Length: 189
Image 1 (spheres, rainbow, N blue to C red):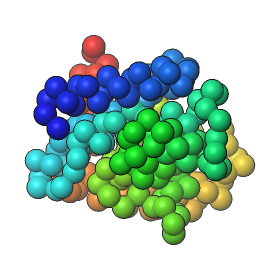
Image 2 (cartoon, one colour; image 1 turned 60 degrees about the vertical axis):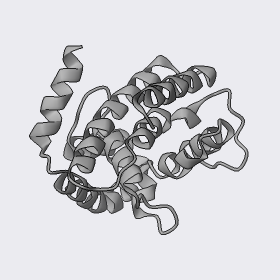
Image 3 (cartoon, one colour; image 1 turned 90 degrees about the vertical axis):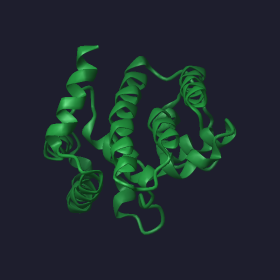
Image 4 (cartoon, rainbow, N blue to C red; image 1 turned 180 degrees about the vertical axis):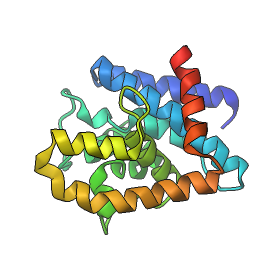
């Protein structure tokens, strides 16, 4: 997609978020996830990895659209599957695998793990972005404190998530410090 096409897609994604009446906090989180995801994707592409940056940004923007209170789920059992339903309904079916595999359960799933670069980047960016940039250690520790009901999931998902992080960052040739520097530019805006 050309530059104007990328902007049109980004604008369309924002319209979708507003159409499905997402709370401002979820929209803000999604914009931040997209910011980090775009940086990682561009560095991956510069390193020679085949990655569709437009789909990464769009997938990051729409990964949580399934949290909408106005969408009536068809077969979806969680918000990631609901996000896949919505992007398909909105003519962006190529994003369905990206948004459906962003939840923590996906990393340990035999059926829907994040396998493509687009899936891996959105999965990872979602884990390290809350309202701020956090390490996986911080994120898992926070989730463990707040969500004792998913301790088994957190325990099972930690090592594969760390391995995915090493794969993504290593392949992109970036460090945690690079992510922090890039995030600082976002925070200054």
